[in-house]
Length: 154
Image (cartoon, rainbow, N blue to C red):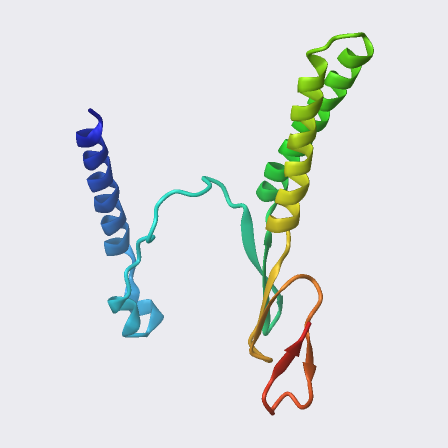
């Protein structure tokens, strides 16, 4: 029933993306590869707000880390879960049997918030001077001389 509408929307989105690319001046990159690369996402969708940002930590090091929007997103789960859990606990103390359900759902949201923050909040570092990419706050230690075969010790 909605297949025709879906096809029209997808065609319109592709048309808008192509128009955006046409307005972009690819010669400013001074690289012939930019004209050969597709400039549209492989898969559309995702968050409609920035959950992560790329920050420059030093001239040779960048970090892909959680943005303020991402912190609010994960925190929202925690606030909702904590609020529902407290409400369920208060109702449980007053003798409501249904309160166990709210207590359980609230705890699920709180735990989900914790795991969302742990997974989304772990920064990914890119260091061009050492040629390393790692996940987490601690920089990996290199065994031996950096110029030799680099073996990373975690």
